[in-house]
Image 1: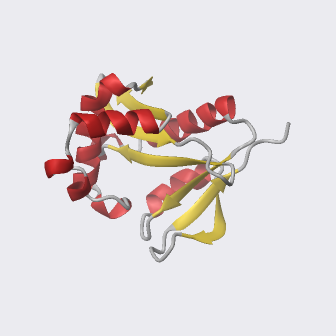
Image 2: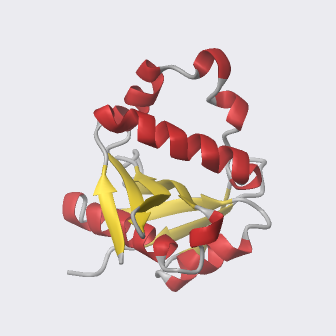
Length: 160
């Protein structure tokens, strides 16, 4: 069973530990780099701010271990919620953790912003992530990341 725990600012140390692990283990799948979050930039205030500024942050637990993370942003000026910071520990991949993470963001978005589509970006070469998102109802869009070659994908809200 996968347990999804929504975080508060006081959970910053857990979020920090997972995020640094994700950036070190899978640097090619993120626009951010490990150096963007370490050294003088690695402060409790910054980590707390990240959990406060982004309204949905969750850690996924499997077999009593934190094995994944995901976030969802507030809608932007185009009315899009962004699914960001998704990562699953290598030994937990293929066990439904990624699907649970995507489902958690979609459920949160539908509950809090029912008319908003959910968008995300996938870095070039990250085909397993693109497959995960397609499996969960995302479709490729014509838009691409500015100069990065990122694939943009979109999940539209269901018609009421």
